[in-house]
Length: 365
Image 1 (tube, rainbow, N blue to C red):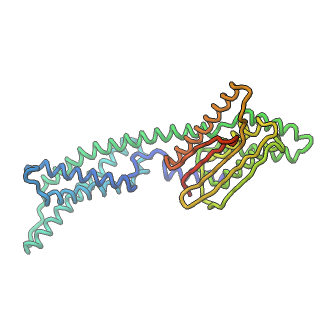
Image 2 (cartoon, one colour):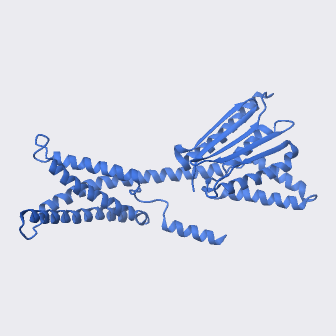
Image 3 (cartoon, one colour):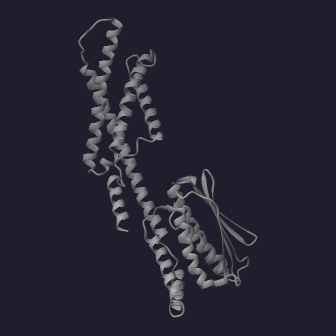
């Protein structure tokens, strides 16, 4: 156990949880940066003395090339520095980001003028000493200082908002994950107490199963292999099987799936717990819970069905039970959304005395 902990600590040191700036290397960010750079080039061209009346397409092309190179090179540099910046103080990280953009602007402006002089020499077939236009360089630096300051401030605030939302979401997920019904704990302890004198080996196994569940409940919210989640669910069902006996029947229909598929920790156990608490336990003869797991090329599907009592004698208890069932489904739906976004779905249906929960989530390896 100590070795994995050391490995996780080193991974966290390499990749902080709160980066200073957003990831500017993904395709969506690059597309938006290219679009903003082109709009800026168009604005600079229009603001020239010629204006729209004598719009100069050659100047637009020249300005676009220069602005695009500055924006994209700055994005690559900031992307490489992203996690290093996250380990610095805000002032140091902001100053370093600002200096990098200005330095790249200066270097590419000098390179651009050098290329233009070289191209003109080829056209005129003459050799002239390179004379840099320092006022043009100063103009570029002034524009870069103003625009990059605004943009970096916006990106910083956007990332801080994202960090705050992620922290709140992780805290909410952890609170949802750590909830194990008190009645399940009490029933498990009673089962263990009754087995200690008659079946000590079974009691020891129940204690081990219960410890596995609580270890998973207290662990950090994360995605775990599907096989691990199914094992935790089986531990829970083995404990409940001792209490309910033949009243509880479980039909596992596990299709083929890859070993690398991952789902949120303790996602199935609350659903199976609901199936027992709201479906099997209230019925005098008990019932059967069916758990189907299948995988296709794009997503993993999980279907859990259980019987439920069509007529309830106590309306107040019925409403209370339905409310708790909805809360559990809403909690799991929020956890799925936090990990997978809109790509994951959870729905349920109640027909002909059978309550069914459907989960569809994208494959995560």
